[in-house]
Image (cartoon, rainbow, N blue to C red; front, top):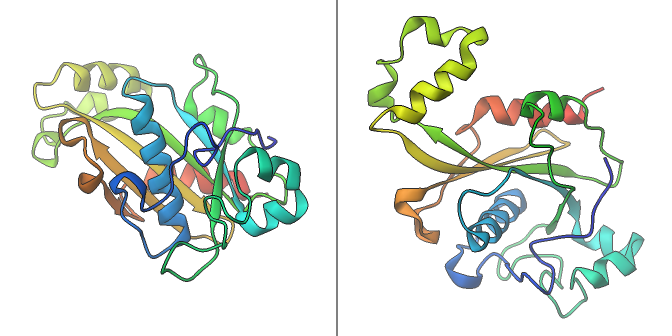
Length: 212
C-alpha cells in the first residue's frame, strides 16, 4: 500500500483542526482524525469507506517536498509550523489512499495491507448503522454468531432505533489509538465524540496492518 496524493489538507479541500468549528485537540492523532471527520462531513453522508495514511508533516516536507507542495504543506500553509496553533507536538498529515473495493469485506481488505516505513499510522473513515445500548439486548441469539453477520446487518437496518454513524478510527505504529464518532442525527462539529476505545474491533483491525 503506497501513499496517494489526496489529503484533507490539500488546497482544494482545506480542513485543519480549528477551522470551521473543528475543536483543536491535544493529541496529534486526535487532531488528524477530526480533520478527516470534517473532510468527510464536507462530502456528505452515504459515502464509501475511506482509508488514510498518516505521515509526520515535517518528515513529509523533507523527504517528499513535491508531494508536500501539492498538498499545500508549505511553511505558511496548514500545519506550516509542524504543530497545531497553541498546542505542542508534531503534526500528522492524512493522505487518502485509493478507493476501497466495494465488493471486498473490510476485514479481509485490511488484512492485506502493508505500509511503507514512512507511514506513521493510518486511519479509516466508514459509515455504519448502530443500535443504542438499550436496544442491543433485543438482538436474537442466533444472529450473534459470526456466520450470521449478514442477517444481523439486515436486522439492525430494519430496527426502529437504528442510528447512522460515521466512525473515523486511527492508530499509530507506537500503539496509540483514537476514534471519532459523528451521529447523522447530531451532525455538528461540536457533537463529535472522541476516545480510544469507542470502536475496539475496528481499531484492532487497523493496528494489525502494522504487525508482521
